[in-house]
Image 1 (spheres, helix red, strand yellow):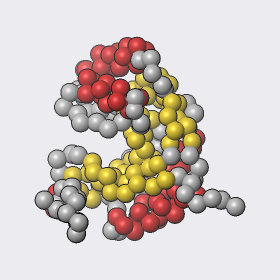
Image 2 (spheres, helix red, strand yellow):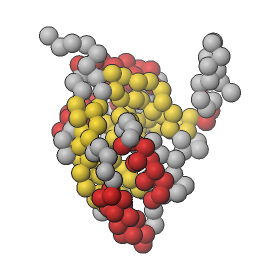
Image 3 (tube, one colour):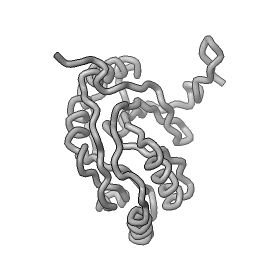
Image 4 (cartoon, one colour):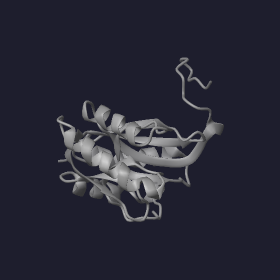
Length: 193
């Protein structure tokens, strides 16, 4: 196991990490816990952590620490904002079942556009559409039944449907499909004058 000089575990060894990175904001509890439980119900083999992606997965052509410095410079100038989760929808090409965003979508687009350059630049296969994924990689014939379950459970949920984005996290994928947190950044760490 990899450990730092203080003996703290560092996660999977470097040889198990893929050159695939994303920038996300995790959904806090109790909403995050509900969404994780729902995702496990919809896709039982999944090991979720509810989030919205600012930068969808991408390879880096530089060491991740270079990209991290760019993320920090941009997040220092950003302002925290609220996200509202609306209704369950399905992306037609990929059959990904997701929650549409109301407020906060334009702020996510702005962050995405600012971040998707320099060390983090990547030609994405789809136009960026802010959302929260509920189920993916499911058989096409199961999409409608899975969507119906998601709609029912989302309708039954009585907790908060909004959360505040104050931090974002740079994550890296591994050979076993897990994502590990590399660095966390606070929005608005530097006051704009």
